[in-house]
Image: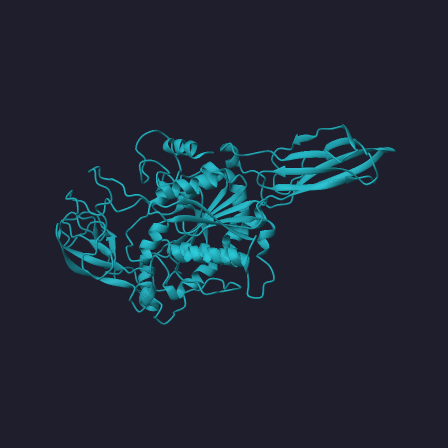
Length: 566
C-alpha cells in the first residue's frame, strides 16, 4: 500500500542522572528474575549510539543483519530498522521504546538483536529461533524523545508539537523545573475542594497500609485540614489559560497509532488523526508492507505484567487459542512475569488504540507489550493488591535505594497558584531501572519475542507416488503445518489480509501433467493440521525426477518435495 493510501486510511479509520547513577554501588533487584544464559553489559543508549551499534552488527554479521532506514523523525533523525535472518521465513516485528520515557525499551530491543546474532560467548552460530522465523527490530522508533530523555529534557514527547488547547500555538505549555533542581518531577496543589488527602493510614501488626508521601482518594470534604488536587508534572501556565502542561512539545506516539476508529468525530488519542506523526506514519507503512508478519512485540520501560492485545475488550479474543499457546511460553521466557490483556490494566478502559491494537486489528497478528522494569511485592505492605503498588515502590526505594529515589515534597512558589508542593520519583528509579540494574532487567525479558518461533506456521509437503503404467505416475500430496500456530489468524481474516496455502505442481522437462491442477488452494491450515489430498497423473519423460510439488503461503513461506518414480 502506498503512502497516499495509508495516509487516507489513517485519516479516517530513573536515583540520579544516568551518569551519576553509574557511580553508585550496584544493588541487586529485590527479587531477581530468572537468570539468563548471558548477561552482557547493557547501558542506556541514545539514537546516535543505537545507530553506531546497528552499523557495527551489520559489519560483524554480513548477510545475517541488514539495516534499513524506513523514515525520518520530526526532528530529522533517521528511523532505523534491523532485519535479522532469512527473508522467506515468518517475520516477528519488534520495536523498542515508543513513549517519551521508554529508554529501557530501546535497550531491550537492541539487546535482543545482539542475543540473536550471538546467543552466548561460546556460541558457534546465531540463535536457534532464526531457523524458524526472521526479525524486523526497531530499537528506537521515537529517537527525538529518546535523545531528549537521556539529555534531561524528559518532558519532550517526540513527534511534531500540537495545538491541544486551540490557541493557535503549538507545544508552548509543557512541564517546567519550578525549584531549579535540574529535574522535572511532580507538583500537587492544595485545594479546599480537592478530592485527595495525605495517605496517613497507620501501621498495624508490623504491616504498612499507607505513607504520607502518597495521596489517597478521600472525596471532597471542607472539614479536612488539607486537601489536594490530582498531581501533575511541575509546570507553569505559559499561555495564561489557567492550565499547566496541556500543550507539551511533541505528540504522544503511543496514542497516535491506529487502534479503533468507530465513527467520525473527535478522537481521544493524540494528534489530529491516527498516524499524523511522521514516526508513527512510517511505522505503520513499514509494518503494513510486511506481508509475512507473524507477531508484534513492543518493549516498554516499566510495568508489572506482560500485556497482550485487546485494549478495547474482546476484539483480539478471536485468536484466544493462539494466545493460549503462546502465553505460557511468554511467561516462561520472561522468568515468570504474569500475563494479562491490556484491557485488564487498571484505568485502561476507553483507550482507543495503541501499537497492540494496530497490530491485532489491522495487521491481523498476535501482539504483546513487554515491560522491562518491575519489582516484587514488599512483605511489609499490608494492602491487598494484584500487582505492586506505589506503596510497594516506596518501601522498595527505602530498603534498596536508601530512599534516594524519591524527592520529599517541599513547598515551591508557583507564579500562578501560589505555594505548591514539588517532589516525587526521580528519573531512573520508579519508571526506568537505575543504570546499574538495567542489564539484569533487560536480559530477563529480551528473548521473549524469540518464543514466537515455535508458534510460527511451518509447511511440509508429503508425497505418495505409485506407478500406474510403465511411464505414468499417480502422485498424491498433502501439506502439513508443523508449526505451533495456524497459517492465518482469525484477526487476519477479519482484516482481509489472510491468504490460502497454495499447492503447485511443476513437471520437469520431458514430463507431462496428464491430470490434476497445476495450482490449487488448500485454505488455512491450523497448527498440526494436514490438508486435503491433491492428486495428479504424470507421464514421466525420463527416469528420476518427474516434477516438483511446492506449497507456499505469505507467512509460512515455501516447502517443496521432488516427485520421483518408485
